[in-house]
Length: 232
Length: 232
Image (cartoon, rainbow over all chains, first blue to last red; front, side, top):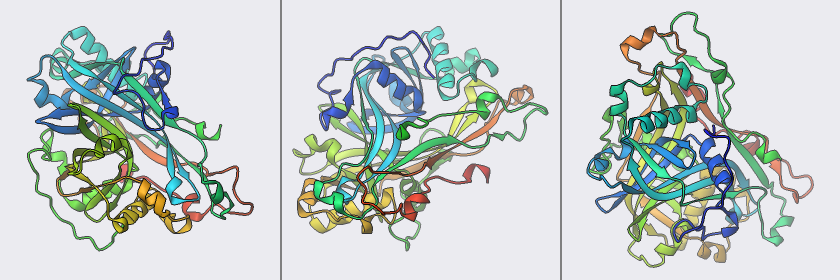
């Protein structure tokens, strides 16, 4: 899902807002860790302020190196009036498992999340926009882009794309077993982790599919999860 | 996952901020539709404003009738100073499938989402807080609560819970096949839907499990998805 293979891992500098304050040992600021989470997840939740009111909208995205491209339509009304960009918080969350402890209090979830802060700006350059649309499609389903009809000039113009630099961001994750109070380990209560995965079912062909067109391998063999992560 | 079975379906009144403006036919304001989505999803994304900056934090939640209880720790720093509650936007998203069109432009996803607006207030009443903690656990894994050690007074006090009324909310969903441009239906490109599901793997017992404790059936048979929804 990564769009570039020659990335070097970097450590982002935590800022006042990107620094993990609650359970800091779960935090991580390495770009490769952040990129891996962004590349595996399918949607992000974009937070912005309009009329002094917070909005959180799920939307599609793609990554090209250290830029996140967001489908701009959710924020479209506002964006038309904001030439200088808009302050956003973009959050991506992968759920890896339910953590079942012996006490109600210590129940938890295993997850990997990324929170990005910054100013999202409208992409106006046609070439960059085209590249962003390619990133959207390839992010969702690699190998798809080259097979489908490419965007027309009108479609390109009609799509609102936001660009957000991946410079102020942090990852946070929890893995492994429940952590119970010492006294509770003697309780005869089942405890452990129930791993969760996102799996693809059998592809359902469109009713109007041209006769003889086969399901492509990249659809048939689609994989979008952390595989045996919880079992490692 | 529903905590009450005697619910009557109601139509919420759309407000300026909860009304679906983009593709309004995908919107729905029925409480039963909204509750079903909330009951199936496992985490929500809470948006709030701090220092004129939007924050979006993933967190656990539970529903009791027309109230959403949110684990308050993500917003804890801010909440301590806000006795009158905090304005939030809480969004929950379920991804049901990838919609693969013949053109890049018409690619989409099938999803069900809920967006809730309102003022979240701290739950101080011990009885309500205890009920909220039960809702958190039962929301994640039904039948678990009665088996585990109940919260101590100290644990109850140490848990921050927010309550949000489910009165200003909307659901939005997309289902079914891609909608291509008429001219594109002749293209020999595979098109259709790739259904996505969240499935549970095999439960992994904690290393310190008391000998002889079996995996409970509600763990072994855990189901958390829309089943054959895409195939109907």
